[in-house]
Length: 266
Image (cartoon, rainbow, N blue to C red):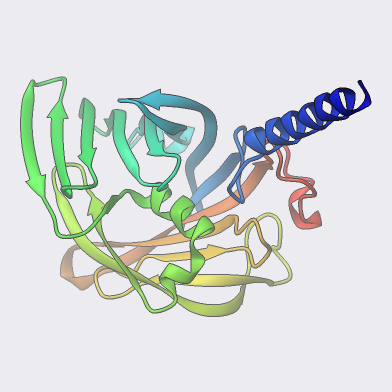
């Protein structure tokens, strides 16, 4: 009887331990994490960007993260170029690569509902404009990411960027081969969390191209603090659009959040 009781007790303990491990997030981020940004150009407030790791779901038999976001222009910018973009990305939970992206976009006078079906094994993307019914297919040589899924991939696999990571960048109507490299630690200002003093960050730099810069925190969460994207104008002129972190909410199982992010609640 004692042996049977001991065995049953051991089984219960193992089952509880297995259950605990099963729900623990395998990544540095967790479901429910929400990140907010303010967009600026030359000191002018342009609008807001929000990204949330919404839930875990299934897509074609695979476990996926649902990453939801929106971009909305400021009242001032609405007078000249209104932006109201809403998007949803399904990310393979094991490989952290996007499998499907849906985008409901309004940018100036351009309005459409776009769907991207991504086959990472064959490095192929089917572009569907659900508004016009137009469907196109593109093939690349590398895995496919948009800007935010690439950042989530980096957060879990920072070592992949030490010597430069090459991928196909998902554009509105095609694929563009790009490379980003970790250029090491630097110090930056991020409005409003460090307007007066600089904070440490790792700099991911686009090699060639327009030269997008991504700055992530040096703690284990590797939160994207700032994104700088140059915009080219006529006559070789250009200006930078900056996304500065201004709100943060940790996800499930992320534990203690570094002090610098604790006052950035939604």
